[in-house]
Amino acid sequence: MTSQRIPPDATSPMSNSLRTIGIVFAREFFAYFKTPLAAIFLFVFLALAAGLTFFATGFFTRGQADLASFFTWHPWLFLILMPAIGMRLWAEERRSGTIELLMTLPVRTWELVVAKFLAGWAFVAVALICTFPMWWTVNYLGAPDNGVIFASYVGSWLMAGAFLALAACISAMTKNQVIAFIVAGLIGFLLVMAGFDLVLSAVRGWAPTFVTDAVQSLSFISHFNRLSRGVIELPTVIFFISMILLCLWINIQVVDLKKAA
Amino acid sequence: MPLIETQNLTKSFGDVLAVDDVSLGVDRGEVVGFLGPNGAGKSTTMRMIAGFLEPDQGTAEICGHDVVADAIAARRRLGYLPEGAPAYGDMTVASFLNFVGRMRGMSGPGLNDRLAYMVDKVHLGDVWNKPVDALSKGFKRRVGIAQALVHDPDVLILDEPTDGLDPNQKHEMRSLIGEIAAEKAIVVSTHILEEVEAICTRTVIIARGKVVADETPAALLKRSRRPQEVRVRITRQSGDADLVKALSPHLPGSDIRLIESHGDQSELVVKLGQGRISTADLTNTLARDGLIVTEIAEAPPRLDDVFREITQSQPPS
View 1 (tube, chains in turn orange, yellow):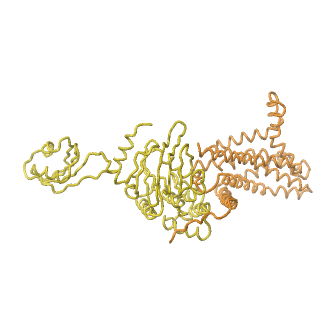
View 2 (view 1 turned 90 degrees about the vertical axis):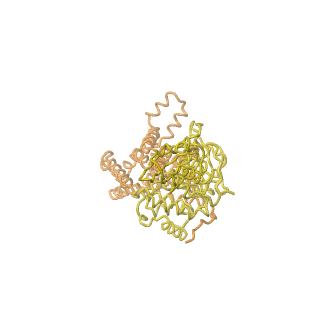
């Protein structure tokens, strides 16, 4: 049989990039389901989300047909669960050596970074979709404002994306998944706590007001709370998307820097 | 124009100079055996040519494309087997090779035909639908070779392709490399020196990051400084004199060992101490002492001796 040579690259760079992102996305997305990780993650997420909603915040005793008591836990759940999803994205490639294979294929670093992130983010979307019984329950029991619920889901997914991009970025810095998990969790914790007095009072003592305001504006919880009030505010959407883009940009730099190191 | 060309490639890790000013050109049809002790800089050099590491200084080109400035075009023409043949363990062999093929821009019947060809060539039929993690080391290595060849590249860089293979598999791998060699430029790193003699048209030895030898395996063998060693079977016509003692004056400085002796038949190994002597001259010398040579053979120089001599004689940088 004669060998099949690759045709010269006739398609546009953008369509090539989209094709590459699609191929890597599919590999990464389905990789979650080939290990027990997906099942464990989904079980833990759903069990904690439901358990905290029903038992810790008294979903039934509040007597209100909304999902506020459900969404209020999301920043704390994502703080732990997003590093768990993101820690393997790059650290595992380094540990197993497949990064050498991946980075010598005719692909650009940004395509890989974006594809891996999108795969993780899509997996988070699956997890959020799996919480539909909560939505169904509250609609069965009363007449909630589904617009607020929808905005909260969008906000939750955007916030999860920011946590995940951060975790993926930290994952690119090490081959040890445990280190990636802990560091991403710690930085995520600071970003969640940035709106609380615990952090603000520590800054207020020595920094000028604008620094305190800047730290406060990084608070994931403050931004998320605005979305979960039912209004998809542009500044908040821009905040989470900017966080995602910033982390992905750092991620690209880290991966490229490791090549030169 | 060489398909692989490096100019003054240099790379340090901290204070350690891993690759020091390596310049190489590899033409189509050449199979270069890349040799060197562990830590000599082989894998680092290969990683730079493959575009996985960026050099501190110097350049590398594949088919005229700079591996840093024009990385995508260079990588399209390259097939690379990294050290340890890494692959995604959770994927089946079929889905992994399909993934690599599609990442390399292949699709549809072209990809399927090529995969079918690779299954046959690298003998992956039995494990085609098994996860890579479930494969033996030998099969993993074959999967690594298949992914490097899936797009039929002009340039192949194989870091220890036969590591972990059994003798039959090694033979098959060498045959495969020999089969495709004519139309490609191939660099193979290995610790198995018989492999170099079997498949390589050229040998490059690297020690402490520097190229210390670059010639054909045959030319390299001529550099052997190992004492000439001759195995002789003789028939004694007279006397019971000590054979070794009797021969010593004729072969000054030589190490003569009696291997076995039955009746008038003896077998000796002579390691010549001074210069070289032809087997005919040695036969005549022995005949003067009444010893009839019935068999004489000179042990050929060995590449591992040359390798040891060259790599151990390099002063630390």
